[in-house]
Image 1 (cartoon, rainbow, N blue to C red):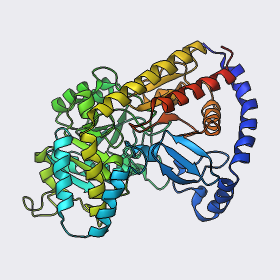
Image 2: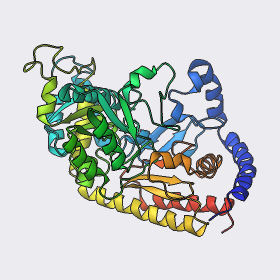
Image 3: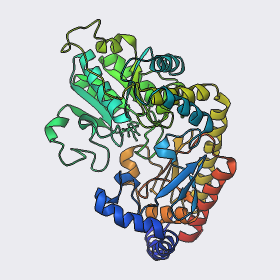
Image 4: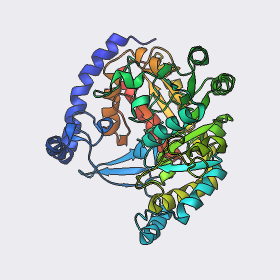
Length: 455
Ligand SMILES: Cc1ncc(COP(=O)(O)O)c(C=O)c1O
């Protein structure tokens, strides 16, 4: 066990020097941030992208690398919020997008591209008998919940503490400490009246809720993403499957991160558990905006079918101006087709990151067990906690420091490594990060531990 207070003191000293060096190396980013603060709230387009003392402004990306406006190069372990599983801007996708733009950026009519993509997705994603496209993961979750409620004729939804499903009202709770109440101003408590939360990796807590409330659906990320890249304990997802069957609720896997990442068929394939409905995002858009889809059992999806249910008030609504636009459809199709033909890539990447986690765990142990890895496949968390966290609550509540995540983020930036966020070390690398790039992260991390703890 490390002496946390001594380490915390050392961190205080370290951070000042790292901040000065970072400021010296990123003057243009700093300038843009100052300007941005006047134009965009907080100087950023998404608060999660902020880091102290100012974020880097990235000008360009390619493969596993990004370059900031000051010309600094970084290995990217965040990859467009986990979107770019085959690296930034793979040339075969760019070529397809070039062709797609000639088709028309947005047709506004039914088109063969959405149909072709839907057919491919039903072959790649287990149990996806029917699918609809959305413009984001948030939207996909929103429509999925509405569909689940329409199908089951129940109101309650169970989500998992630390689970992130986007900013949609009914799911925007129990994301961060204290894991209760609205996560945002402007979100009335009443809108969460039917939302219940249970800790991750605790099927008994879910059963308790299923027993007491008529629950339409249990929403779970097969591996907690924003909650710290925490994977399921043996049997957890199977138990959720069994319980939801037993209590007549739907099991929804939010595979916005895990989809096409853990395996071509996502968490369902990787863990061998079949959900009723699956929510997709990020990768599904082929690296372009407008990335979202949801689907699953035909019997449920038919609640959206205006031919079978002509009365709009009797069916569940889904739609949107840009849904099924040819550019997102062609980009997504091209990427997912390639992924479905690249099984060995998954085996290699997943085992490299397994190895990474084992190696980092070893180093953490050598430094007084002050840190622990979590994750599955390429999804990787590193936690400065007292023991290895098993759920989103423990990720925060078992922390021994207020400074260490930030200090390491700064240290990593200065070592040419980039990820989000400065509050949580969770990595969403691509499947094509090389052994050298993975080892670079491990070495950098070990170097950092050497600076803050006496081995
Ligand atoms: C698991 C999960 N679900 C949903 C979302 C929301 O997706 P989007 O940001 O595309 O709205 C995210 C985004 O990070 C996510 O990680």
